[in-house]
Image (cartoon, rainbow, N blue to C red; front, side):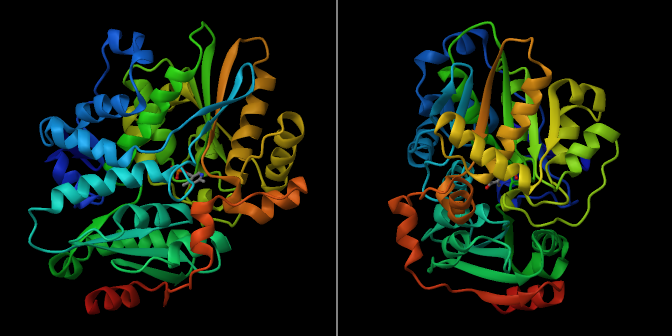
Length: 434
Ligand SMILES: *Cc1c(COP(=O)(O)O)cnc(C)c1O
């Protein structure tokens, strides 16, 4: 399988190159030359495949012969080791729980697979790989956990100072070895800009072997399609329409879902649920894509003012907004509505949902209100464990949220971060010196 840049469709690279470079030289994002499809019999027999087998079958189609079956099997075994169960709120409303990984957010799926794949590819590099990750909260810790202790790879996490929750910050700043946390005095968008600039900086490019682990890296999207496919398997086979509501920020998660659909999964509609950072919601309603500065919300992992994966979605729909509107809706909810969502899910179903999932719930509810007449099976994608946002959730439901053991462990460790301002020169000097 070859990959092209969203900025130049005639410029192809191998899967390996797409993975190791993260971002194309021209600043575009990599896309597979075609979206592979599943055979009819695979789709009809999904039930007979385990989650790992689904992962292997899917990954194979994106990788081609660049990783042999035996090695791919190992990568899947070591990365897809936690489940993605569907929990029923009622007969037709489901939650896809994506927080059973080491850092309790869906990003573990992408990060684990990416780390194992890169680890495999760097074996024949003679220069250390420096991975830059801009994080609005959850990416950084997922990536850091994936790469922790991997030889030949150094990870720099850039996070916006004071704009991630205290638990998220602990997760970001308590790993040592090959992981360095950079606390940037700015917003998530500033962090993302610094990373993007580093990639187009000739000096840094020559001096360091840079790679990115943001959702701009295609190797993170591929494994995210696994759980959509596995979710379809878990839903009862019936004639109902299937709708996924995806809490969205940088639009990586929803892009993976759209890819799963394009591969042949029977998904009728995606709802991109956004918080007050609703650039994509506005785009679908007005046709104008107008990035702007992000604002801080309770669902902070979606506080993105210029969603990177928008370019990929445009590619998938050949830049045709009408086609896009047929398959994607987007609805936006502010913090007050987010709290209402947490409260309602708890009072109505006894289920504790996190602020991101709550935005997904509110969007779904609004959609279902309008489309009452249809028979719909809906899936709220629950992107993080509520304990990661303990204070917000507890205030909403007046009940204690238990912290899982794997999260509790990092809370007692000491925070270690390096504070930098948001100027590119500062970041460049730091990288050059390290
Ligand atoms: C990253 C994240 C999101 C947003 O996902 P995108 O792929 O950036 O759209 C939503 N919820 C949580 C908990 C996240 O960590």
